[in-house]
Length: 158
Figure 1: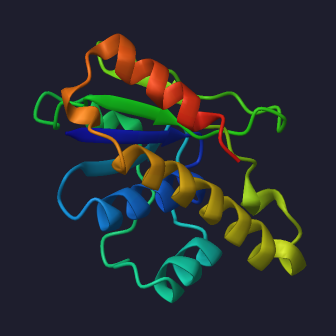
Figure 2: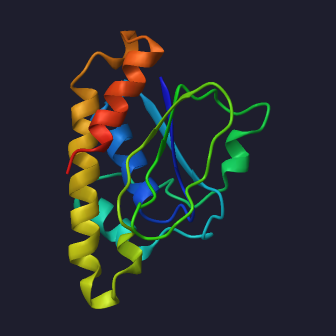
Figure 3: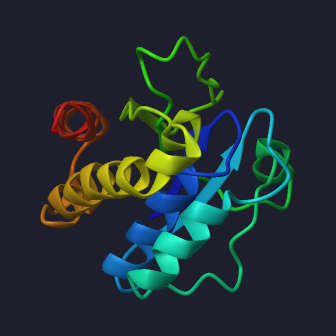
């Protein structure tokens, strides 16, 4: 099952969730991340945190969602947006048939640099809880309506 995590800049939240899903699913899913307006680099605090948590950051990079719209791109089963609802961000919309859900997380990169560690840890913890809740279910066998409802419920978790 392929999961695409979308955000605007693809430098923090989407990168974190991509890594969490790939690590915790142990090959059960393939997660990717992208941005509608990619920052061009992964936020240094994202890389620091992922490395501290034992994630492989070798291939972590900020990329455009155009990569996943190409003819030779992997087909996505699920698309999750992670833009924060209160941050006045415009979340990208993915066209097509994948099951879509919104897991809003405030952008830790918007915090003052002195608060990055706390902000990034909070974002990571919320995303990890949601990812683990998904991976605790037999989501691969759910029909699309049930999967959408499940993803949306998980997206409301704190």
